[in-house]
Amino acid sequence: MIHEILTAARAFLARDLSQDQDAVLTSLCGEAMAVWQGRLREGLTPEDCRGAFVTACAWTALAGLAPALEAGVPVPRSFTAGDLSVSMGGSGGDWNRAAYRLKDRAEELMAPYTRDEGLIFREVAG
Image 1 (cartoon, rainbow, N blue to C red):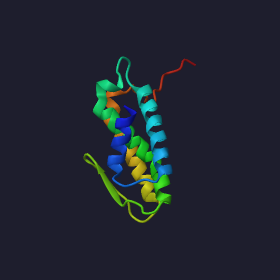
Image 2: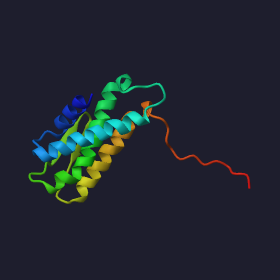
Image 3: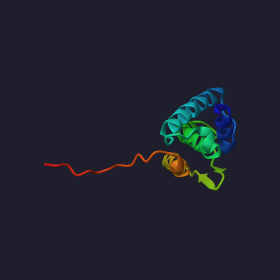
Image 4: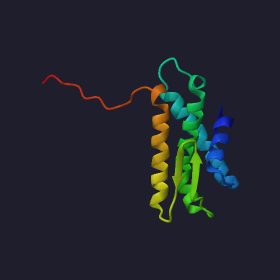
């Protein structure tokens, strides 16, 4: 499945990467896959939610790659992944916003398949 995730990430990015950048993207895809797999609900496998899983992993990896791409030239000004469009302007903060947006969308996409890891407050006897 890592090949599928890497292919999706490259397609979403829609630009050529240097060999070093591609190696980083490969590593980030593997890490994203491990993280999302670890967050799946009990009894679910990545194959059970394959489309969402592949897309979320690709978006998560691209969010991690965004700062590295900011340092490279030329910088893509926009890309589209499904109904998500990310457009970058001229400032470095745009990359941070794009990365957060990708992470948020990955979270939304995987919400039906992952354990609820929200904060819970419990009353403590005292």
